[in-house]
Length: 358
Image (cartoon, rainbow, N blue to C red):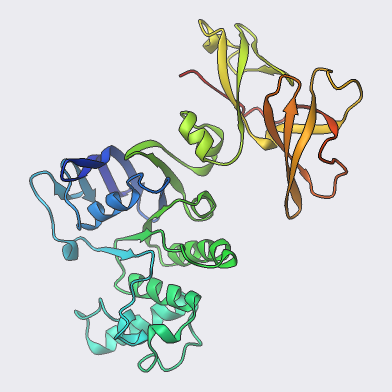
C-alpha cells in the first residue's frame, strides 16, 4: 500500500524547548491516523510541522514520497496539498458560509468552485442549509459550524487532511456522534487524514492507526487492538482504557501465576527465562465475576468497592484479598452491589493478558 505520509525522526523546537523528539511513523493513503496524548505531549506541534507552519530541527517529512521539509529545506504550506481543520473551527466571521467553504477554491473557475462547494456541503450533511451567501458563522449552531469547517477543509480535495482536536468544546452527545460521522465522510471521499486528540474514544472511533505521544515522544504506533491489548510500556497501558497492572510470579516453562488464576503463555513460558517476577496488564474484559462460594479470604474472592453504569454494562472496581484493585465489566442489571464479595477468575477465552518487563 502506498504511503501518503512519512515522518522520519522528526523533532520540533521552540527556541531551546523541544516540543517533539525523534518521532517516526507512516500513514498509508486512504487511512486515518491519530496522534493521541495529554495536553503538552506535542500533538499540535507535530501537525503544524506536517502542515508547514513550523520547521523541523531534526529529521524529515515526506508526502507521497516527496520531501516537504527537513532541516535544510521547507516547502511552503500552500504547495503541500495539506488541509487543516482547527479545534475552534476557525471560520472567518466576516465571510458567509458559502465564502468560507469556497475560501480555498480561488484557483478554480467560478462554475467549478460552486460545484465543489455544493458537493462538499452535501458530503458533510448540510443539504438543508439555505442561503449560503447570506448566512454567517455566528448564525449557525455549533454542530453546523463544525460541518462547515469540515466542508471547507475537504473542498480543495487535499492529499492529506490534518484535524487538530476538532471536537473539543462540543456537547457530549456530539463528541460521541461526530467522530463516527466524520470517519464515514473521509472514507467516502477517500481522504487521508491525521487527527490529534486527548480523547481515546475519538481515537478509537475514527482512526485506523493510533500513535500515543508523551512528552514529545511517540510511545507506540499501531491499530486500536494493538494499542489496547498490547501496550509497549506503562504509560500506554495506563493512558489507554482502564486496567490494572499486577506484579506476578513467573513459572518458567509453564506461564505465570496470578491471584485469580494461572495464565499459560503461547510460547510455553520460554520468554520468561530469567524473569522471576513480571508485570501484566489486566483489562476489565479479561475478568469474569461469579457469586462467591466460600470465605472472604478464599483465593480469587474480591470485594466490590465501586460500580459505574455504562448503559448496558457496568464497570466494577474490585479489591482482592492482597489489597490489589482490578476491574471487571458485567451486564448492568446483574445483582452485584458495592460491599459484596464475589469470585473472580481469568476468562479462558481471553488470552490477551500482557506481561511487560521494564
